[in-house]
Image (cartoon, rainbow, N blue to C red; front, side, top):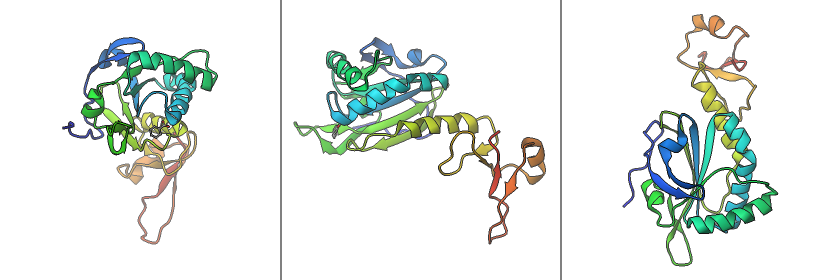
Length: 222
Ligand code: BEZ
C-alpha cells in the first residue's frame, strides 16, 4: 500500500537514500535551499536520458533560483554510475552535477505515490511515472506534476513555474496563462481597488468584461 498522495502545502517527508554521490538525508541535503525532485522509470531508457541531460545543462539555472535538483530512478547506484557516462556523452556534458537517488527497491516510489499502474516493465512490475516535486526551504510541497513514462517533461516550463512561485510568494500578484518572466501579472483578487496605486506604482489596467465586475486587473511585473 502506498502512502496518501501529497498535496500542495503538505510537509514533504524526509527520507534517507543512496545516491551516486553517497548516502543522503534529504532535509540535510536540501539545507536552506529549495529542491526539485524528479523521478524516472529506470536507467538506460531513452526519454529519461534526454531529461537527465537537459537538467544537467540547466543546473546553473536551478541554482541561480536557489533550487537544488535531485533525480530518482529505480535502479542501483552502480547502474546510475554507468548510465551517467551515457547521459554525459549524449548531452555533450563535461560533468554531471546533481545526485540520482537509487530507489532499486521502489521504497520511495511507493512512499511518494509515484508508481504508474498502467506502465509495466518486462517483469510486469509497475514503473515509476515522471513525477516532479518542488519543495521549499521549509520542506513544504509547493508544486507536483505527474507525467506518464512515455512523455518527457518540459524543463523550460518547470523553470517558469519556479519563477512564478518565487514572484508570487512575495508580491500581491498571480501569473496569467503562458506568462513569461518580465511580462504583465494579474493583481490578486484580495487587493482592494484603493490600494492599487500604492502597491503598483508603475500602473495597472482593469479589463472591462460583460459582467461589469472589476477582476481582470493587470499590472507590470513588480
Ligand atoms: C523512456 O525513458 O524512454 C521510457 C521509459 C519507460 C517507458 C517508456 C519510455
